[in-house]
Image (cartoon, rainbow, N blue to C red):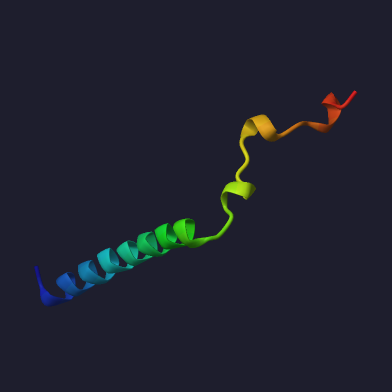
Length: 50
């Protein structure tokens, strides 16, 4: 592989790895996330009210 090929590969892999690490950091560092978590069972459609 040429030098430019290695550079492109390292930039691509480094960028994806950095994005993944940032997402994991944001998920674990946001305070009080358990209070904002909802599931499909929590959603009540408006036509079921009656």
